[in-house]
Length: 391
Image (cartoon, rainbow, N blue to C red; front, side, top):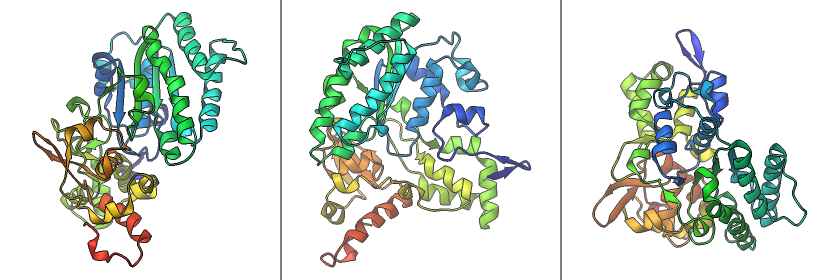
């Protein structure tokens, strides 16, 4: 770990539990003011898209702790100036990254998860009860027993859909989604807040088709920095780590900052708030190891690329200044949106500028360029000369 004031500071590298971060003394970049605003002044049904390893699961975990009334975990954070009541709500949380890649695996995950909530609320089901009926009963029973509306948190909703895409299992997975998540719309009266995260949008074939009141907050300026780390937050939180990294590498503080910025900064998620966002997974790993490396690609962030983007599209297109219509970027289905849309959603491209017609995308930083290069180059044969690589 990093030495500060002769003590080791614990960086939450790879830790997705807000409880663990707070209870075990890991450094926490405080975004609880935005989280309070999201939960109390925002929309009832929310969808947030961010790339892999960008802190979505920590955000979900923080929301769960907030709705469960865990005031003790928030002592000293910004939310304490905003929240006065600390009311406790029942929370139903689904992590679809555990749902597998087949309809049977998705059903098995939901069966196990629903069983936990059924035991919690003393619900007795019939062998003929469908997953949709069970989900409906859990929501209504939680409301009736607690007297409070239910918060429903769904993390990485698109994981089974991504993994099943272009396989015979995909239609079966989407059928499960339609039957189960239609309950969210039907049970509106019993719900306090619904928050769904993902990477890609399958707009017509899954959750979006049955929950048409879902608001996509991914491009809203007030939530541009709800995941990731800003320049201001680095200065407020990581000065000892920056000093240590500079010392280990023989750099000045300015060189350390510039190197980190070149490698991991440069993401933008709103045309109306172009604040620079660092990839949090890579930044924390770099500060923890005092080394510049491609941490993001080694975490599996490239695994879905071949499914959604043809190799020739990567080789022959120029992604340094890539135009895309606003409707395509903000609203389109990943299946029909083209290579640029998938590369934006998965973190290979980011917003560089915009005009009245749409956006211009480009690579956010050196780490991403290198990641894309390492995925494309090994798959190439001698048919295309390496000089055509678009960077």
